Length: 318
Image (tube, rainbow, N blue to C red; front, top):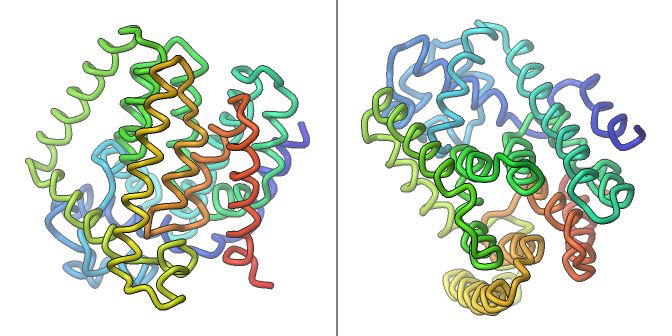
């Protein structure tokens, strides 16, 4: 109960620390209000839209970077929110809070030590601030990943998570190697094809262009990313990014070998991804912490807590 309360408390606050929820709203309005394509038309094409001044300045000239499932979901949300930035923020905050609570409950169901797993996720203040507080869609990814692991809807859960953000595609091969089962493969394929077909009907093949901005992100660093920290020590930024990319590849190969022996270690893989990616934000922990919580992997838990502590000053400057 305490874990759920912690995750719900920020609902009482205004949108915290990020304008991403309003950017989601803007992309949804581009499609459903302006009958345009958020994968072709940036927010700056609609400067008179009521969502435009609230959307993130960094994204006003950028087309959507989100996977098509999330963009499709953003359309009805944009209709419900109408022209109210307050309603848009509250809807995304409420959906993220519900996803956070679902993640707590799923962690308790799936983990060998339910109380520890629920507390590990639910007592995390950084998650509360950025999910119920910030409305980030990473909450959806975390909940769908645990749903895939903890329920019979394995294939659909993996596919829907990847339809929000690409992260599950990195983790799925390890899970497949460890289980050596085809259970869920049919549901995964059907769900993936259905989302792709619907996205193609709605946006044409332009939704594939979302990989372009993602590739651009992979060549940039944020202030708390470890490649950026290395570049501050004098290593050229490009070399630092390449070095961490190579490190992740080595770690991934080692984890794949463990997965082949029957242990997927998805929590550790997600921590490694967070450590090596050049573009890091605190809300990415929404899919790292739950995976570390449900596996009996002490190293993954310690590293997930370490990253929470490391990113906390970015959330609450001290």
